[in-house]
Length: 458
Image 1 (cartoon, rainbow, N blue to C red):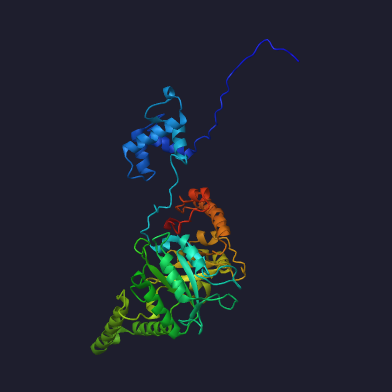
Image 2 (cartoon, one colour):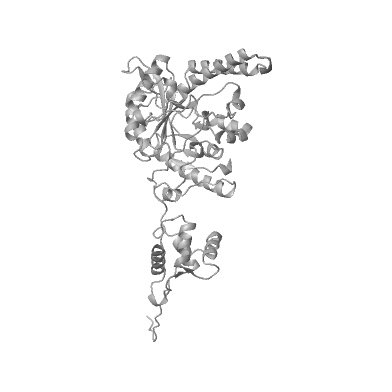
């Protein structure tokens, strides 16, 4: 064994190599540091207010931030600069989960735009507990979905003599066990706003007769009472904002057949009246036409402006967002009508075809109307599809099978990440996605139910 005549001791320095600040951080630092090498507390305060949107921040808050950053990065007091941040300090602050945590579950977006400007968290066959063929129908998946932030609930209505109210909710033409409609309505009312104050849209797939539709109208009005949103006209002419519709329930389904037939005959009558040459009409005829026109207006006013009709409300009065597919194919279905808001539903396959052949029309339609996309019928195991096609074309209601929540959550994380890349690197679309960091950090974080999309991209 050898011997040693000398022993040398030395210290090792362990320093974590930090990543270089990205160009946008450098640009912000140079702007608010006014070209200097250090940012003062006053300059940081300006940055917090003007860029971060912290309008309530004060100079004392900026002082506290500077002190925390310096204490965390510079442990030896004699090397600590007072009251200023370097570029690296500024970069460290912006990306620190401790000093600058991501925005939590509070809503910070502008929620005063029309509802069509927002992505809405949408469920498909919300009452199913499992697969699409033989699982049980229950209120439990509806409750779970609402607690997770879902804002659009779908109910399939079918006649059933065994039900107390004559109406059952289940997946038609399958072996799924039904649940009573009144149970679903009561559960929706009880849990609708447990995670979000913004409106809940109930889409009804209606397979009922006229008498059962009247029964459904009675159940809905009795259950939701003043919380039910009534359209100001027989067809919604303009969209309200989520802020205006807080704690409200909105019904969306196809209008009754008799309403559509009456409306069609009325439109034909109006066209025939407009087609007459006014120069050939004498005063008496003009007076008669004017009288009839005024009478139509009066009838229209009676039904249009009663936001809360007295007494029993007809089924058609409850429908705020009309659904249905107009005759004439896809081109006709995507036609934008002035002063008329409606909802169009397309399967994932139909959407792909629509995008490939009429992509511009799809985007134009979603500027003022609702587009709902749902999984194709062969997804018996309640699997889901790629939502990006719908989102990038403005579809507000991209419906998910919520029966396998964990898989849905992972899928959303992956696809939202791709959507962020798309929006900020490819298009001019400005999408608010500040909740994404929290979502990735905590898988159990409830996804925001409404996400605004700027009209700049449409």
